Image (tube, rainbow, N blue to C red; front, side, top):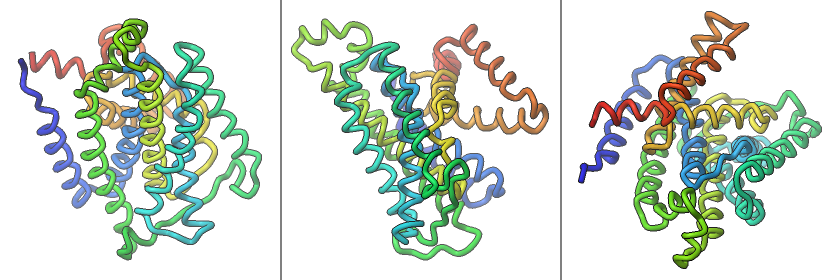
Length: 310
């Protein structure tokens, strides 16, 4: 039996990222902060994909997390980053708990299209709401974290360091979950859910729990993204945003909990370089990368690391 090195890899990765939070230039901190925020969303999407489900509506919870954290600062006057992150996560989890009662009954294209439909409903509501800034959105600014005031110029580094710690905790917990009996049921449901029912397990319950967890992770990612950018707008809930998450999930694969964060960093780097040197055809560059992954690495980039380890 091969030794599981995921915990050690998580610790080393987080140590390197924390060092980057202290010494890296601001542009790199910003790029990595966005990558980690999207990686959290994709981590939940990977959980759904291991269950045999593909959601094109994670932008719903990403947008809910971003707007909930921003509204807490702008409307309630609670500009504490810790409270904003909790608010975004709880709001997304609560909505996922309600919608999951319906979506857990559907599979394949019906699940994908229903999740997309709910995401577009939120997008339409945000666009039509002048109180929420309509298509322009609005800015937000966190002045403290857990009651400690933040000096000007270090906020983004602090938020990035917190997102790194969140990565460590969430990825390790999800790794333990996937290694448990309940987590193995997810893969069994993907292969043959009828046999899982015959064994006495509840397919509906497993799918529902996985959907709520994925929604909570997307809300947390939305809150971190809002803090990093300092602005929210309806694009967070648009279908192209959900498509980005699916792209990143396919790019990295579902082989390990670190794969979403690796692929998110590569995705943000590719998009930044393509925007700079080919601003009119950067989408084509990403499309070529997607085709290459599907043709030569259908299991995602993580398969390269597996082959090297083997």
